[in-house]
Length: 181
Length: 202
Image 1 (cartoon, each protein chain N blue to C red):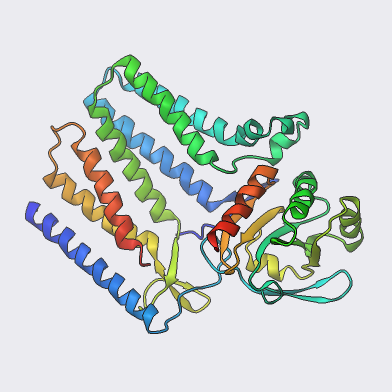
Image 2: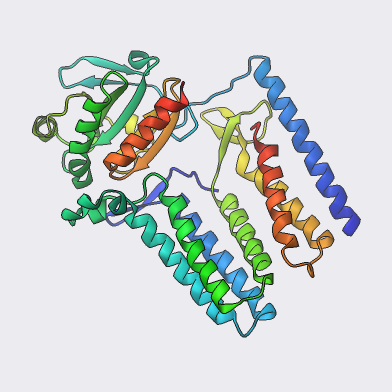
């Protein structure tokens, strides 16, 4: 058995080195290298939603080459209320460097309180409304707030379920800005 | 195996499968360790497991309160205690804090150096348990096996890691001398580095 364990380990190492080489060849010959999954290290999934003015917004087409802070929120959600003042402040601080987008989970919220929320906190960035919950489903958002920070290449660098503090937002944004240079 | 982003609702709380898997892995690693300590250091077993539990509590408390350590002003609104946890470097701080506490107790109680091997063995066991419960998606794969995501086959990175680590563990069982204190720990560190290198392309 002692010898068998040695040969098993060597065989495993050889198999994985071979698999790694196959993968590199696959990528070099134009194979698919990225996949949109709502998790860190993957491309952020595409979506198209409406603004409160009824204009269509497409992600990532309309933010091509920009770092993006995506925040899924609802007007009745207490942690969303707690983090929004900081988010507004950070959005102003990083104006021109990072695009902030609020995604209201409209399928579990109402338009009127959602608009009141935007007005109350004087949210300066774009907000879109996920009326059918399709985008929340695609992004696997099980609770609000959930935030994603996407770098300039469209890759998710940070995902957080729950409230984010100022420091956490800055940390995630700097990661997105630094990682895409 | 579970998707890391899937969750279940427990009343007002959302529990990610990833968190459940971490809890199960920690419990199993702890059981493995206490079981092995029974044979190796029966007298000190209870004291060691008590201090390990304290270390775990220290890690959880540090992780939970890290945002309030970074921004003490947050505590002015008590409801923030429910809303915030974790954040930048919270995990690292929690692990270092727990490690310092346990290391201090180790030094003070003069526990055997052999404990290090038992700790690393149980941690490896816990890590493999976690990997067996939670899917880790890799890059799109040219092969016909893997995790199917919307018709695209992705490398099952967690399974690759389990296979390689299991082979290293079997090898260690027969080849690494148990009488040499610390040898297994060094071997496991090398095994983990090699495993990460091997799975890097995926």
